[in-house]
Image 1 (cartoon, rainbow, N blue to C red):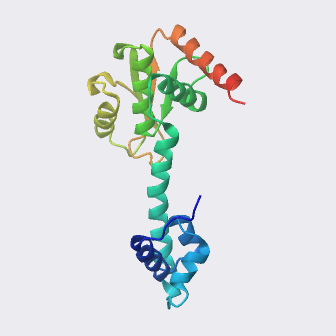
Image 2: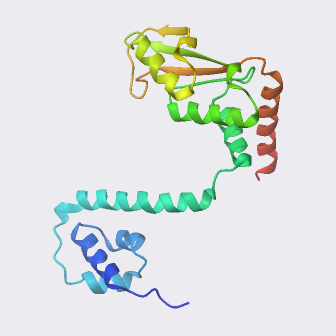
Image 3: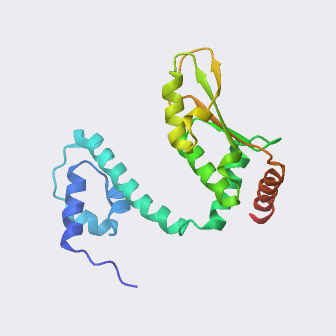
Length: 202
């Protein structure tokens, strides 16, 4: 297999990245060219290394773009089976081990957990939502927020536990607990799915 062809776009990119303060190794990770090829195009460049911070930021942006592509390729799409893996993995890490309920401050985690419960066959009417809020969090704002996340009417969010202290970091709207009523059968399914993961992944 021959070396990748150096097109004009790569050359422009190599020069631009070098001028932003990136090293040869850093450029090599972004541009699909060998180090000797990269060196050939940058050896005579004068670089202001005070721009290293800018270069690092550019490098980070490029890495995020590339890793997004790689992650999409590795995941291969999300089907019903992979949703069950997500459900089991989330519950393994975050769920109550005596009954089917989970509490978290991350709205995306809660949203995906509920979607996976639906995929498992659990109807929305079985879900009970309660909140755990710090004293300085507005109860009504929190109810509106978690109602949108969960798809549950805010009027049905009646249980709110108040915690002493002030909100910190990502706890802007506190924590949301999702509990499933009459869940013994589904709880056992999820716990057994966790066991399947433990046995099958070696």
